[in-house]
Length: 264
Image 1 (cartoon, one colour):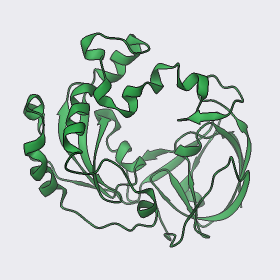
Image 2 (cartoon, one colour):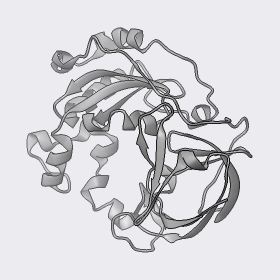
Image 3 (cartoon, one colour):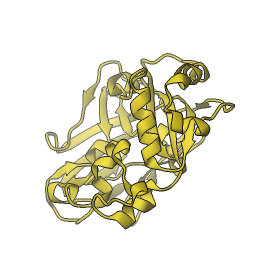
Image 4 (cartoon, rainbow, N blue to C red):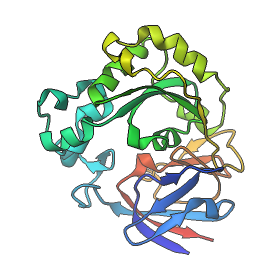
């Protein structure tokens, strides 16, 4: 089987285990169905996810000029506390920013390599947790806009991590944590204006990833440096493909790369 197209983050569907789909322009592939099969990945060209041109990818699947111009790559994406749509203030495109920022957001705890705090749109639960490779997660607050979520994250990351150690995540070097207890422990640090949105009675969500074998020693596949790779797929966790020889391939980190994918 042969597939060809530009890489975008895998779509996922909650299940036991989680189902993953690699979606191309005119086709899609259920990645769970190719576990234990040999995959060949060949880099053909770049294709910016915004302008579609064959220009080197800078960040988030965009070429450098698009990354610094389009509203979907504004600083408030990575730093939600910089959101200003609730003040009617524009960053790059106020109409876009209102649509994205003025909707319910969740501040959560997730455990993928360690307990971390994060922010996502409510509509992205549990997709965001799946993308991070978290095997357990819980909501802390649900707020009406991105700014309130952002200032909550800033306050809480003084007391809990806000980054995932991807190496520990892909090797499954993680411990179970009681996220309900963690949530209660962090309650005193939630900003006063956010306290009315605190979620008190929900349970943590557990996630099961389709992995037959975790790598012990890992090496990261970078298509910019290695344009062709072949290996047996042994698992999928987060946005990573895990191969039998210890190679791991971050689909999200290679968005905007146009590839040929062979399966046998």
